[in-house]
Length: 239
Image 1 (cartoon, rainbow, N blue to C red):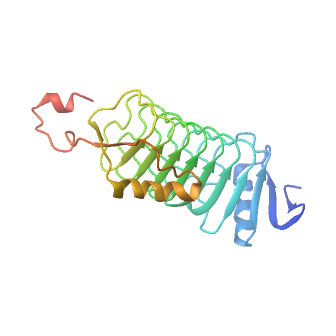
Image 2: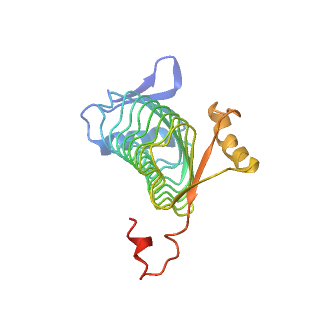
Image 3: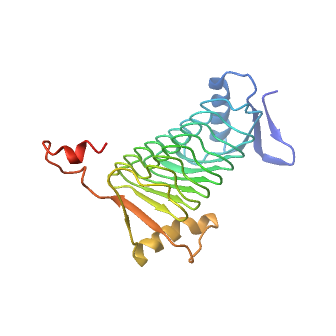
């Protein structure tokens, strides 16, 4: 049976993925969510497109690892992934919270609008690419070109950053403690104010990650790519 009450907790529903059609799994998740149940999804087999477009109030735990696009288009659900997540986890989410217990593949939080993604391991390349808002917290190291063309929101890396960090930023911010391999085009390291650090601490505190002893680097756009004379190749040929 694919859907059954979890032993010892009548409020939880267990949904098995296995080789079932993902559409069918999604229908089961939505039905349980609409009934006010917390959900545990098992035997995920790193399948793609699990938990997409989940509504506010939905609480889902995926046991094991998931494939591409898990939690994409999240509108307010609380999603926990026990182990690793493939590419594009939380892409285009507008609200809610996603926790990834291990590694997050390429482009975690791509184009997200709001909410929080918490990665307990490292993240792959281009974390937060084109994000518009929200927060991505990575306890490990963020991969190369993380923050690429981020229009808003914050990426907070507690274990350093790879090459081409914060390349071609708009109004997004990348906060790093630890080593940065190198900065991307038009990325500038600034000294954060006490008020700005307090904002980051307020994001980390509910995750149990606040540490006032950290030496932060706040990376923002140098704005050379925002306004430039098209005949001045020194600006646009940097890309």
